[in-house]
Image (cartoon, rainbow, N blue to C red):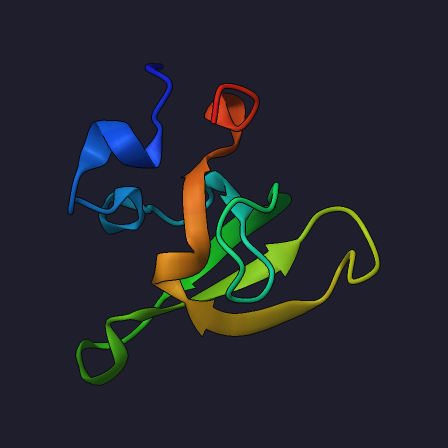
Length: 84
């Protein structure tokens, strides 16, 4: 898969390409430039909440926890996080 950087994408967000079961780098908090933690996409939000996604944290302090988060915090697919 190609590696993606926010500068490569312009205004296009990679989080629009999330599928259930895919692994993503999740940006904790609102700070841009912070390296992400791996999460698994569990469920896409319904039409009334299409900007949310349910994820499960795979490492770190919240490992195993699943919660609804803004899709905009999914930075890049996990396999591309080193290049980001």
